[in-house]
Length: 101
Image (cartoon, rainbow, N blue to C red):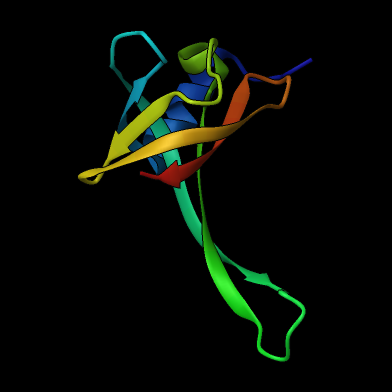
């Protein structure tokens, strides 16, 4: 059981996040607040030279994306992304792994 409330989670996201446009498949777009991460991850392709790829993801309140599913879209910073993986943690926070369109 989570200690914080949905309002507490919104405060955390407002402090560290930004507004993104979330559109469920077949639905209407809505502005939500999310923490945007776009870190690099090392990939071993079996050769002698390693390379890195970007792994963009969003952290949001589950209440804001309660019906999130693969194939939904997200827009921010002038770019559009498609949701590839939805990871709800059971405490009111959901991470969306996204891919640039």
